[in-house]
Image (cartoon, rainbow, N blue to C red; front, side):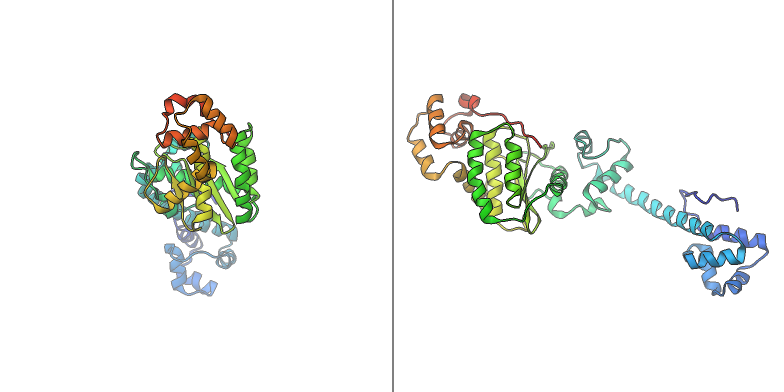
Length: 357
């Protein structure tokens, strides 16, 4: 019995093989062992074949009968069961290899979301840890499906799943008060002014203001084939998540995306997951969120008055912006989206953002 107590065979070897060796050394039969242990012969035979596990009680009985320490038998049993699990895992990994290749692993690794490795088995294990699942087939359905399609780009459900999961992981680390609808509505009024003033730490201020209302704001770098500006879902009944990407790092897109997601929180249910793409239309709830965002940044009456000032110029846009406390970039974005001015002519008024975590 020179088998190492810490050895874990790649091929499961039942402790029964070592038990047979021990019986042969002692000149004992399985029937003799069963009688001395006071156990049915069927149980002993099951241990020999690896069908019956060696429990702590059984290991102690073997120590008395064979004069071999109980821990030796328990270690053999543990190694055997571990080998079975590892063999099963390798079989499952082989089955999941095609699915794993659909996730943007290299891109995720560059962002530090998962460990860098080219070994497919290690990638699959890392993806399971990232998503918190025992099988990639168990990636939550709400993450694995692109609920809203832009109709322009080829979206990857797997990239979107990874992007949403990263937002969830980041949100779990942000302390947030319980959701308060009235408080959030009041905060949005102040956030509109924040969008106008745009201090260098606006992203930190925005996150803190929303956290006090029960809304967690996370900034997650976009992944290729996601084509996502933002998303909204609920981490818990009292904690909502607004997840924003840096795909279009301009103030008009950023703030419209934020207020669009805020609209979903205030107008729609907690069970839905909303994913926003640029120029997304069609869904009634998306249209409602679009109107909410547009009116939150520039009121409908104010916007109608603005249109009376056409044709527009740089100076006129700046004057309107100052009068209404609306960022010139946000105003340009709205007018250009509605085709009242070209983006190219007033692009210099749209500030490019850099946000802090």
